[in-house]
Amino acid sequence: MINYKKEASLLLKNNRKQILPTVIFIGLLGMMYSLFEDFSILFIFLFLCIDYGYIQIARKVTQGKGEQINVANEGIYGILHYTKLFSTYILYSLFEFLIYLAEVIIFMIFTAIVYRDAIADVLNAFYYSADLNMEMIYELLFPLALPFLILIIVVVLTAVLYHLNFDMSKYLIKDGCKGLKAMGLSRKIMSSHKMELLKLYLSYALRYILVLGISVGLYVISEQLDLMVGLTVVLPVVISSLARSIVIDSNLVISKYLFYYDLNPEIANELKGTYKTVLPEIEENYPEGDHLSNFTTIEGELVEDEVQTERLEFEKITKYKLLLGCCLFLPFYLFIGQYVISIIFMLIPFFARMTDENVLNSWFNLFYDGVLLAIGMLCFYEFFRGYFRRFYEVIKDHPLLFTVVGIEVVYAVSIFGSNLVELITHSSEDSVNQETIEQIMLIEPVPMIISVVLIAPILEELVFRGLIFRTVNLYNRYLAHFVSAFLFGFVHVSTEIIYYHQYGEIVQIIPYFLMGLVFSIMYDKYKTLGVSVYFHMLNNLISVILIFLLYM
Image 1 (cartoon, rainbow, N blue to C red):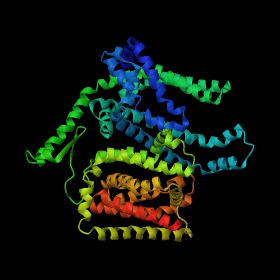
Image 2: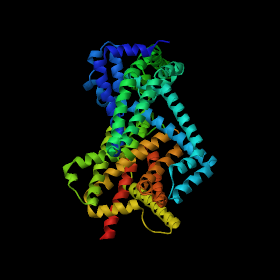
Image 3: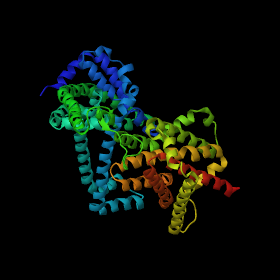
Image 4: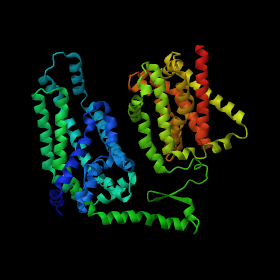
């Protein structure tokens, strides 16, 4: 085996002045999320691709261009090329997180079954004993030490295997190979080279132990010195990050680049092979001069466009883009967007001066929905191409009858759902979500009406019918109806359940679920978002009118 570590050390030694400042800068940016807990999610996503700067450093060093390395280029390369890198990095991180989450859930279930008595003793002691000391706590937790040790070992082994299989996906971006394709190719190539890469990682084991020792030592020292609360956290994190950047990252990233560089012939062969396997199949199934008209090229893959059959008459959009939308835009819509957009919202002077909570919420809903819709329409413009023409083709023969029957169906299922909730809960109260909307709308109606009647229906139909239904529909039509309708219902009560722990609100999903089911059936039948958006808007408009009539 070639001594990649030794070669990397020589390259680093010759370019130390250029490499170390940049590596330190990248390391400091990478740990920003741990210093600002309130904005940790924002920093995680902002600096998600920051470590690609390491790969750029390794590339320039191995090409003999070490003197060109500087903080302004490689230090912020991951931010400057965020859109190009994001799909690969987010999928890499998301799959890793989901694997760890599954392991923790399985561990919790296993522990709850096998060690239920020990867990019961711990809970009783913490709830009912006021004079617990450290010795008693250790004694209570000792029976659970074995399962926790097993969990740690499993997680560590999983992390090692995951990195051995998929680390190369980040290095493949330079070859135009991104996202799921990069991860699949990485796993394929590394299937016969994992032991070599593992030996390379193990050669850095002492350095990892050294950095871990520094981190623990600094934390203990800062606690003993009784520093300010901020310094107790910041000092160990900053110095540990610097130590890791200097001792490990600066050398390891070059070693890995040299390792992957030696695999270039295999990478080139696999990328070339993608086209070799697809093209002959096309030639066989399509006559000459006709086959290329039915295909579009997407990142090196030839994907057949949807043809006019009963199942494939939806708006033309690739499977890759649908999956990417569910992996990226959906989490942004559900969780991350609230943090990012709220920060931008409060930086605008017009909104920052508002003091009334209801007025502020009304304008924020409009701003939030508007920004998300703009992003969604830019990213998934395929759903809106020929939007009005397709909608007109559906309703042109009997527009009034179509409208009346459609809105009657929507309201019938909504009333049925509300009555069902009333039977279950023995209460006629609306959901907390509905009451909140009514309260805000009566105080600051204009932005709320624009958001509820015009913007939210388009945004929600894009997310729940356009992305979720279409993605799940690739695998199972009936499951697609259920999943899109359930998530549509859950989102409308999620705030009360997740943040305020009002678990009784779960039953309020029923009317929203039934309406979502009607909208997804409409979309499935007419193959255009225009129909479901139209009835969604009408439903919300009638609800707004009824609110004002009721309170007048």
